[in-house]
Image (cartoon, rainbow, N blue to C red; front, side, top):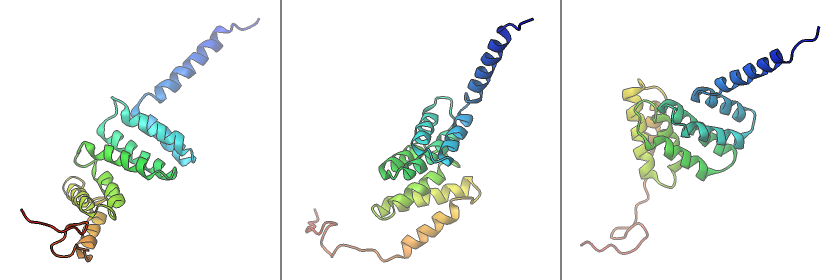
Length: 171
Protein backbone atom coordinates (compact mmCIF):
# COMPACT_ATOMS: atom_id res chain seq x y z
CA UNK A 1 0.00 0.00 0.00
CA UNK A 2 1.62 3.31 -1.12
CA UNK A 3 2.09 6.11 1.40
CA UNK A 4 0.43 9.41 0.91
CA UNK A 5 2.64 12.45 0.12
CA UNK A 6 0.81 14.46 2.80
CA UNK A 7 3.05 13.35 5.73
CA UNK A 8 6.18 14.27 3.72
CA UNK A 9 4.71 17.66 2.90
CA UNK A 10 3.78 18.25 6.54
CA UNK A 11 7.27 17.22 7.63
CA UNK A 12 8.86 19.70 5.19
CA UNK A 13 6.53 22.45 6.37
CA UNK A 14 7.40 21.70 9.99
CA UNK A 15 11.14 21.80 9.24
CA UNK A 16 10.84 25.15 7.46
CA UNK A 17 8.78 26.57 10.31
CA UNK A 18 11.36 25.36 12.84
CA UNK A 19 14.17 26.94 10.84
CA UNK A 20 12.31 30.25 10.70
CA UNK A 21 11.67 30.24 14.44
CA UNK A 22 15.35 29.49 15.11
CA UNK A 23 16.36 32.64 13.21
CA UNK A 24 13.52 34.74 14.54
CA UNK A 25 15.26 36.15 17.60
CA UNK A 26 17.89 38.88 17.37
CA UNK A 27 20.24 36.73 19.45
CA UNK A 28 20.05 33.81 17.04
CA UNK A 29 20.53 36.15 14.07
CA UNK A 30 23.59 37.56 15.84
CA UNK A 31 24.98 34.05 16.32
CA UNK A 32 24.41 33.27 12.64
CA UNK A 33 26.29 36.45 11.66
CA UNK A 34 29.13 35.48 14.02
CA UNK A 35 29.31 32.06 12.37
CA UNK A 36 29.66 33.76 8.98
CA UNK A 37 32.43 35.99 10.34
CA UNK A 38 34.25 32.99 11.82
CA UNK A 39 33.98 31.20 8.46
CA UNK A 40 35.68 34.14 6.72
CA UNK A 41 32.55 35.50 5.03
CA UNK A 42 33.11 39.08 6.19
CA UNK A 43 30.84 40.81 3.66
CA UNK A 44 27.91 38.52 4.44
CA UNK A 45 28.60 38.81 8.17
CA UNK A 46 28.64 42.61 7.90
CA UNK A 47 25.23 42.62 6.19
CA UNK A 48 23.85 40.32 8.87
CA UNK A 49 25.35 42.30 11.76
CA UNK A 50 23.86 45.49 10.29
CA UNK A 51 20.48 43.79 9.94
CA UNK A 52 20.57 42.67 13.57
CA UNK A 53 21.52 46.18 14.75
CA UNK A 54 18.64 47.67 12.76
CA UNK A 55 16.00 45.32 14.16
CA UNK A 56 13.31 46.99 16.24
CA UNK A 57 13.15 43.99 18.59
CA UNK A 58 16.90 44.00 19.30
CA UNK A 59 17.75 45.22 22.78
CA UNK A 60 20.59 47.60 23.49
CA UNK A 61 23.02 44.81 24.39
CA UNK A 62 22.38 42.91 21.16
CA UNK A 63 22.50 46.11 19.07
CA UNK A 64 25.83 47.18 20.56
CA UNK A 65 27.28 43.67 20.21
CA UNK A 66 26.17 43.56 16.58
CA UNK A 67 27.74 46.94 15.83
CA UNK A 68 31.01 45.99 17.55
CA UNK A 69 31.12 42.77 15.55
CA UNK A 70 30.23 44.71 12.39
CA UNK A 71 33.24 46.98 13.00
CA UNK A 72 35.45 43.88 13.10
CA UNK A 73 33.88 42.64 9.85
CA UNK A 74 34.73 46.03 8.35
CA UNK A 75 38.31 45.53 9.55
CA UNK A 76 38.39 42.16 7.76
CA UNK A 77 37.27 44.02 4.62
CA UNK A 78 40.02 46.66 5.20
CA UNK A 79 37.45 49.46 5.44
CA UNK A 80 38.36 51.85 8.28
CA UNK A 81 35.53 54.30 7.54
CA UNK A 82 33.01 51.47 7.73
CA UNK A 83 34.41 50.34 11.10
CA UNK A 84 34.34 53.85 12.56
CA UNK A 85 30.78 54.41 11.36
CA UNK A 86 29.63 51.23 13.17
CA UNK A 87 31.41 52.26 16.36
CA UNK A 88 29.91 55.76 16.19
CA UNK A 89 26.47 54.17 15.89
CA UNK A 90 27.24 51.89 18.83
CA UNK A 91 28.03 54.82 21.14
CA UNK A 92 25.28 57.12 19.84
CA UNK A 93 22.94 55.90 22.56
CA UNK A 94 24.85 56.02 25.83
CA UNK A 95 23.82 52.84 27.66
CA UNK A 96 25.84 52.58 30.89
CA UNK A 97 27.46 49.20 31.33
CA UNK A 98 27.14 48.26 27.66
CA UNK A 99 28.72 51.04 25.61
CA UNK A 100 32.17 51.16 27.23
CA UNK A 101 33.88 48.58 24.97
CA UNK A 102 32.68 50.48 21.88
CA UNK A 103 33.93 53.77 23.35
CA UNK A 104 37.32 52.20 23.97
CA UNK A 105 37.55 50.71 20.46
CA UNK A 106 36.59 54.01 18.85
CA UNK A 107 39.14 55.84 21.01
CA UNK A 108 41.83 53.42 19.83
CA UNK A 109 41.04 54.33 16.23
CA UNK A 110 41.04 58.09 16.90
CA UNK A 111 44.11 58.20 19.13
CA UNK A 112 46.60 59.55 16.58
CA UNK A 113 44.42 61.91 14.59
CA UNK A 114 42.07 63.27 17.27
CA UNK A 115 43.74 62.76 20.62
CA UNK A 116 41.35 65.09 22.46
CA UNK A 117 38.29 63.10 21.44
CA UNK A 118 40.13 59.84 22.07
CA UNK A 119 41.01 61.02 25.57
CA UNK A 120 37.36 61.90 26.22
CA UNK A 121 36.27 58.46 25.03
CA UNK A 122 38.92 56.76 27.18
CA UNK A 123 37.65 58.68 30.22
CA UNK A 124 34.04 57.73 29.43
CA UNK A 125 35.01 54.08 28.92
CA UNK A 126 37.04 53.93 32.14
CA UNK A 127 34.43 55.77 34.20
CA UNK A 128 31.58 53.63 32.93
CA UNK A 129 33.52 50.40 33.37
CA UNK A 130 34.43 51.45 36.90
CA UNK A 131 30.87 52.31 37.90
CA UNK A 132 28.73 49.87 35.89
CA UNK A 133 31.03 46.97 34.98
CA UNK A 134 32.86 46.58 38.31
CA UNK A 135 36.16 47.54 36.68
CA UNK A 136 35.84 44.84 34.04
CA UNK A 137 37.00 45.33 30.43
CA UNK A 138 37.90 48.00 29.28
CA UNK A 139 38.61 49.71 32.61
CA UNK A 140 42.31 48.92 32.97
CA UNK A 141 43.10 49.33 29.26
CA UNK A 142 41.39 52.74 29.18
CA UNK A 143 43.20 53.84 32.35
CA UNK A 144 46.51 52.75 30.84
CA UNK A 145 45.82 54.80 27.69
CA UNK A 146 44.83 57.85 29.75
CA UNK A 147 48.10 57.62 31.66
CA UNK A 148 50.09 57.03 28.49
CA UNK A 149 48.59 60.04 26.70
CA UNK A 150 48.87 62.25 29.80
CA UNK A 151 52.56 61.45 30.18
CA UNK A 152 53.50 61.86 26.53
CA UNK A 153 55.01 65.18 25.39
CA UNK A 154 52.52 67.29 23.50
CA UNK A 155 53.38 69.17 20.37
CA UNK A 156 52.14 72.66 21.04
CA UNK A 157 52.14 75.40 18.43
CA UNK A 158 54.67 78.22 18.93
CA UNK A 159 53.55 80.96 21.31
CA UNK A 160 51.19 83.43 19.68
CA UNK A 161 50.32 81.05 16.85
CA UNK A 162 47.23 78.92 16.28
CA UNK A 163 47.17 75.23 15.47
CA UNK A 164 47.95 75.81 11.78
CA UNK A 165 50.76 78.24 12.57
CA UNK A 166 48.74 81.41 11.79
CA UNK A 167 49.17 84.44 13.97
CA UNK A 168 46.63 84.47 16.78
CA UNK A 169 45.11 87.85 17.54
CA UNK A 170 43.31 87.98 20.90
CA UNK A 171 39.97 89.75 20.71
